[in-house]
Length: 194
Image 1 (cartoon, rainbow, N blue to C red):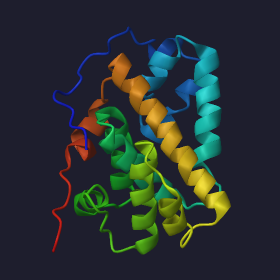
Image 2 (image 1 turned 135 degrees about the vertical axis):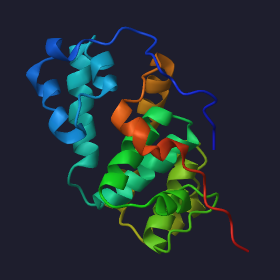
Image 3 (image 1 turned 180 degrees about the horizontal axis):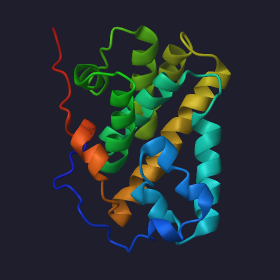
């Protein structure tokens, strides 16, 4: 897992003030309690912001895979990529939904050990896919728990978060206070048991 050495406190680019954002972006407050700093950065290119929100909605809302599994995949990918911003958001939302720090630690352990074989399979696959190391064997293992449709959906979650991890890290998107306080990006992996 790539470790972020210092917390980002200031964006490397100016963020568009919330009052200047289009209404569809301001409505994100209903989901996140604030307009995410990432959206304030994307607002410099409204077409990209709109396309990103449409893709994020298509990948994460509904679909054939339960949202908690997709959130776990997003969290593991973000932690592995060292993107504190995305890990803070996804992990913070999971904590808000009742997932404990201990459960998050189990998800990001070297070998996922959540006690849910279906989730563990998705997390192990996500780690490989994010590193461009998925194999015929890893897909065969995943297919024991997921249909082809679900595998495509999970892989799209990996791709979406790999993209956002790189964009947010490069732009230096700062973690909002609410998510910083939740601290999901600072949780240490659970220790391996042997």
